[in-house]
Image (cartoon, rainbow, N blue to C red; front, side, top):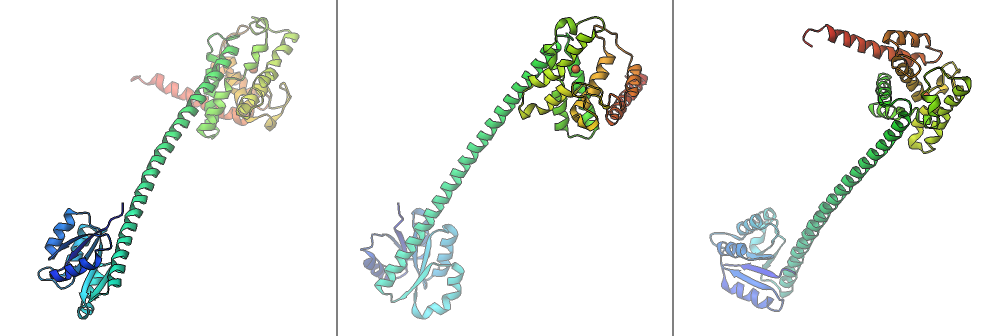
Length: 360
Ligand SMILES: [Fe+2]
């Protein structure tokens, strides 16, 4: 709804009457006052769009009045009505109060209509701009809320999916592990040691977690190996050993071809490769063996040596490390083994200090 409310302020009633008469066909709603003070009362009480004020008035002059209008309602468009001779003296004040325009007495009907109409267009355009700005701000706010909700939802769903995938991976790893290690503790020990090695090698925590997580599937291919071989209490025959070795290729196949499982595949297939090329199933050598697999080889052998299996007793910690040291550069990547020894040394030192501390 367009604003058409005009306030005329002039101490001479005749001037007000004349202005009202000349504007009566213009569909304005006209308020009038004979002083600045009365004009301000009307301004505060009514929704006025344009103010036309005389310059020379007793008590409060037109410039002071219009400056006050600007302070109270900055959007109201202000026009000054002045006698021709007083305009030059009033220029400073006019510029200071930043009025929209001025009319000089005597005015022409055209100038009056044009100035007032222009003032209302200016006022209503300003209102419309503000309305649109508010609308845009409101819509942006709503859009931000929608975006935020959407982001939260996507984040939530992603976490749920990741959790589901992780649970699936753990279940699969546990299923394979259940065939030769009832407790399932083996995979968690491998995971911990793998994470420690990755971190000590300077990998990011995200990468370390990723490799450690996929390490739990290193023996997933054992699902294909008969229990009679897996749980055999004594040494395997050559034929049984050949079957046992197929768990690497089987594991790689179980893990499919999706990029997500690339690291898991590398570990499952290559964790029995040897640094000197004497391992299986591909006889890979040195750096051609994927790094995650070289890391898991160290973690896996250490765990196998230091824990009981159906066909062997657990080795003491120091003996296991001594054995592994002998296999550096043969079975193990020497650099990774060095890092692993450093971690174990630090752990032993920590244990020694703790056990000697009477406060513990
Ligand atoms: Fe294995």
